[in-house]
Length: 123
Image 1 (cartoon, rainbow, N blue to C red):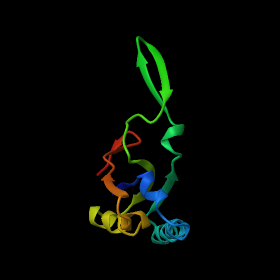
Image 2: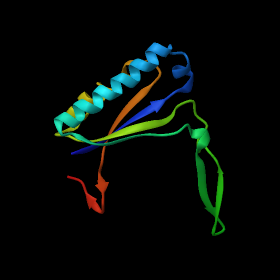
Image 3: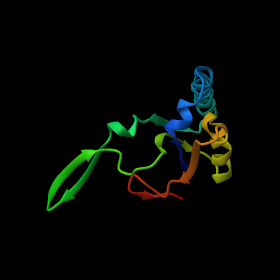
Image 4: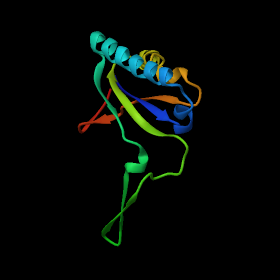
């Protein structure tokens, strides 16, 4: 089963962390990725730039309209994700709990099963 484990960032929370705490998060992600690769559950991971660098695209009267991001005014934003292939939702939750962000109050880690990929419904 494939799952998207997304990390939701609150810049105010990150700004309040010490340099050592920020370094520990990076080191924790490195160890997590190595463990996922070793277990064979790793598909990919991506980190995203700050939403202030995003572009929002909509079509009005048949013409694209592009504005600076982010799309929503919110204090949290999608910071990145892991895409994993594991046995079941319980295992995906177990993996998500190992992500360093999950241990920091104010940051969020969400687990969602993939239901459609590459033109096929997932089982």
